[in-house]
Image 1 (cartoon, rainbow, N blue to C red):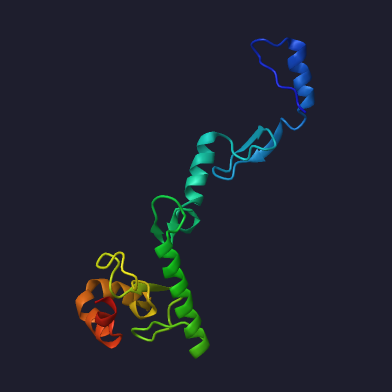
Image 2: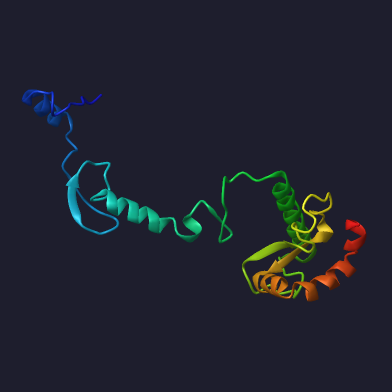
Length: 174
């Protein structure tokens, strides 16, 4: 174990002995952020704390940030409530059914497969029937590409009414 010393109370001999015990103190390294070469301890990668904080800030943008899920900021803890867990299971079941039927994922609105990212969406929103027992039913969840998902929010009443009739959601929620 390395000896620690306090420059205010330790003698000169104690400080010299501590330097001998720390052979990796003067190692030349380059800072990953600013690319400057500097000397320091082996465990220090950065030339100063400012570079460390700036580099960590850049690494955590977008998908690197643990607070972002699917490109959107999520507040609070990463724990999912019971409703979100059920919703994720329903989405996984829908995706599994698609793969077993056709062998690939597709948008249930436009039948498109030209995107790598799909999202599941409630036809009858959580805000309308927040604690309804059938909110996360497979009939109420639709698998959409991003383009259709954005259109669904813009033209919510036009697109939604057809799905409510086809999937008999009024009977399910009344």
